Amino acid sequence: MTSALFSSDGAEVIRRELSPPESGEAVGADATLDDIFEIQKTVSFIKEKAARKVALQFPDDLLVCAVTIARKLEEASGAQTYILGDTSYGSCCVDEVAAEHVGAEVLVHYGPACLSPCRRLPITYVFGHKAVNVDLCAEAFQKRIPQRDSPVMVFSDVVYDHALGELETCLAASYPRAVFCKLSWLEQAPPAGEVYKFGRTFSPDLSLWPDGYSFFYVGGEGATLSNLLLTWPRCAFFSFNPVTNEARREGVHVNRALMKRYYLIEKARDARVVGILVGTLGVSDYLSALSHLKNVIHRAGKKSYLLSMGKLNPAKLANFPEVDVFVLVACPENSLLDSSDFYRPVVTPDEMELACNPAREWGGCCITDFRELLPGMGEAG
Image (cartoon, rainbow, N blue to C red; front, side, top):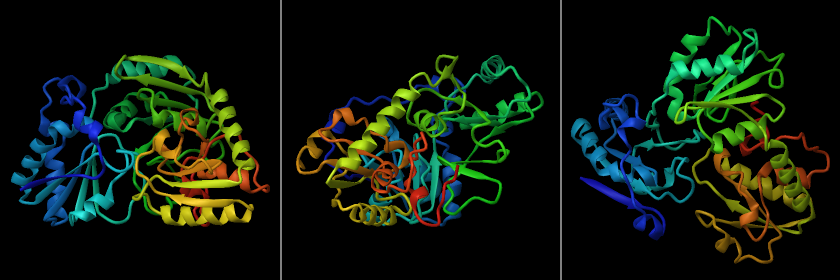
């Protein structure tokens, strides 16, 4: 039996027109649903965990396939599945709370993911592999980075990660100092010599890291690329978009974006009343981050309110006119909101701490992972 669980008032989602993923977007023009949604891998995961109840979390644009996928998994594994849709926060985050409501023992997350660490349930990810012309990507890499001894860090959108192994095979001999990131969802600090950032682990030359590296990103515009650019703004960035097969130099608007973030820090510094927005219930240590922020704000002589309201929009925040600035505790991919859409500025935990702690100086970059601010966590990259 398959049950559908919708965890918020998604009237808009119900009205939204959905369409299944086109085969051309997946690996190979003849890719089947079993290939796209990795049925065999998922069944093996369910059996390995001996799970009887399985939560399947889909983003809105994949809900049209959800019932078909659930039936395939039930037939192959014997487990009961529950479809989770319209999650309370960003669809990139694992919705462990909704999964626990149905008594799920494991969770399968479909679509783009922030890979933020979670601790309540065993999780596996199905990103939905999208096609990459590796030959064109390698050619673009060589044109954009002609110096073969350059230290280069290679990232990708999660839906293109499957192609990085082949890309590494094409380039490793010519670019011995290129480092290819591996997807990872660690709950603890990485081993010595490794860096963990944005759900990836990699082993750079620490004597050069990070400013001595160039970056090459496989993917289109989006939250992942924006986070990379604002985290390491002093590095040269290049990208290859597999949809258009075009490569380009990134970073044209980075300085303007950073100045806007600095302006928000100054607004937070002047604020007297702060609204702490709960933007996740699944990322590890979010409760510690909320407590840490309340203490930081209190020590700065400001008043704070803790607000939990699910997905944010300007109308919701406009109900709190007494709040001068909001600070959003969310996963890295949902942390950088465009405050121009809101009645009051919305800042990150790092920006709020900079505003409240005169001993800290702004380093000209963004820290979007709130876990890096917690005592004992340190900066991962």
